[in-house]
Image (cartoon, rainbow, N blue to C red):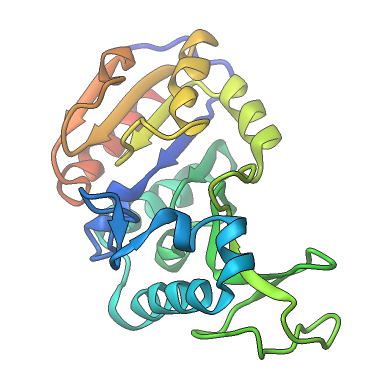
Amino acid sequence: MELPIKNKKVFIHSGAGLSQESGIKTFRDENGLWENHRVEEVATPEAFSLNPDLVYRFYNLRRQQLYQEVKPNTAHQALAQFQKKWQEQVFFCTQNVDDLLERAGCLNVHHMHGELSKMRCLKTHKVFDAPISFTRENQCPCCAEESNLRPHIVWFGEIPFHLDKIQKELLDCDIFLSIGTSNQVYPAASFIQLAKENGAYCIEVNYEPTALSSLYHKSHYGRAGEILSGVLEELTSLL
């Protein structure tokens, strides 16, 4: 199939389904809970103000799992190899807060919902690498004060990161590839529409269809670790 290639750019958007195959727990279970906590208790600015110790503990546990139990899967590795071939023509945007894409070898990953491996100063907004565990007692590296550090995570009610850059890349891309997303969380759920309206060929890789699957030109259903390599080979032939 020949595409109307403008810039030979591929926009790759990944969600929880990509990392779930590595053993990462999804943020919420079917009852809307994570580790028996309501989202309002651990993932909002208000929760951090009311009970910071609970919020610290919640993210420390997730960070421990990421560093001690989880490693990149074959889908992460396939994406790293694809970027190695096409380099700056590939733009990575992920809703995931883990660093599995980077650990697989991917570069310049734009984490729109933040990064579990980072912490941020509440005063200066400077971002630092986070230890496996930190609390209100840890001194901030830039101001040497306690109680100034928070997880570098976009909580509910906060604006995602990199939106201007993401929009620019969506408008410039020739191919939009979505991997493991529910297509339920905005603004990420609007990416397919913006890319398609601007002429991109849109492909999804998902475990099962979503409410927006009909918008894609082509859909591949199954485990990303099993089918993504073939999809990326197909993209290589299109480019």
